[in-house]
Length: 300
Length: 274
Image (tube, rainbow over all chains, first blue to last red; front, side):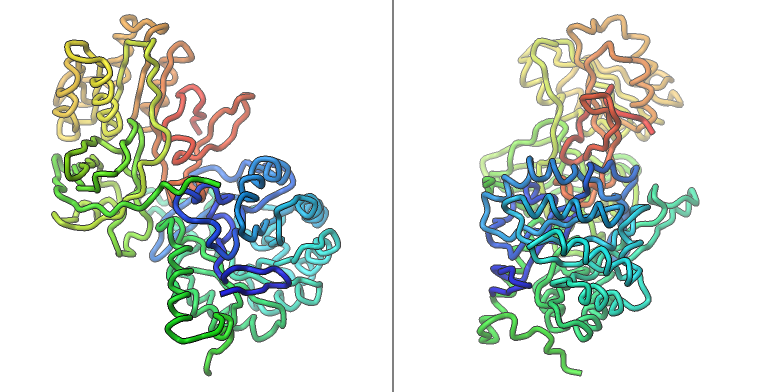
């Protein structure tokens, strides 16, 4: 079940998606974190962020909208308060980073690269719920490439760039960050959406719009992973609505070398470990040497 | 490393009765090992195996007991939307998945022996478990708490029977006067306030936001008061940051806390009403 992403060895291809698993602690009572491929922590910024006013979430058909707005304790507090706990586990820790400017992305990257216990960086250029940074970098190939270059210059760690689906052609952005030196891409972040309360004619979210996640977005995510995997040579990490091992395996067939599980954690705290278990059974049943044998094997 | 002592409980619905129009009491058989809930705690509940509604629903624990063979969790809830509507349709024998008990409950300070419970509408649910707990603490003969119970109408006044088991001092009021005094529960309490010495009183409240906000105005910072808050939740365990509530931190600055993991019980005076 071992996979390697740009020199980063994962015990298995299942990681937690940023923003859905806190910094591991919240789920450590339910799931043996040592059994996971990797933990991608909540997006970290240079300074603590308050986040958006509530209501921040709303259930929709087959999924949910969120507009949390990257509430986080800031990179320094993460290193001091959260990282020591994660270091007690034998699991790959991937720090998701966010900045309002290229310089901020670079500063956060530098701090985390010097912190023991961080094994890779995931650069969030795709958050739809913040005013500055985030999506404004991810929707423009030049800006996305610039952020990637700046982060790469600050770190020896593998750099994963997390892409937004809220673009006309995701492969353009994927190629731009590959050329800029990204070691892998992860996709997709949430799809921008909204939900309306007809009784009051007001949006359900205070932020008006939010990011859609959950099984509702899986077909879109699969399509984009499949498209991106054909256009880049660096590893693609797939995510978007994965609830079961079957879902995860479909992403791998579409071309993902590894996957991330997000919203599923909310409704089943054991989702990640059940998916790992299901993948193991698939490997056994199909007599594979390694799960990676199925990567990109879509027959068309 | 953390101790892996938390799990998802599969429960079997043994009752799900509409006790008043739009108010449902669900009784769930759980394994004997179900952790003892603290008053104010809640569970995340969903229908086993079903993807609609997609998210679990956070519901306060109304009552809990443990028998020889199983535990009995009771949830009193108001049908407020699609999720609770589907829950209300569950029949006897339905399987539900429960995560919990979750969150921080009410804190009981033994030195403040005059306890006041103020409940508005469905806010009675967590306070009933607290009344049960206080009753156990104070022993026979003693009155565990003075209760102020209010609702819009007599039809919407729930939980009175249960409270009567534990407390004999209950002031009932309704907005339209169809039961008890015609008054807002906060106003009824306010008229009585002199009887409650701030130094030896703990106030515990749960109800709609306007009620709690008005209570904050009445009490100012003279009383120790804890309130249980409600917010839409996705995970219930502190990971998604979806159930934010604005509060003042140690320095008096505004910050967002998670209703699920930092609450659902908060000090009333720390809450910022936006």
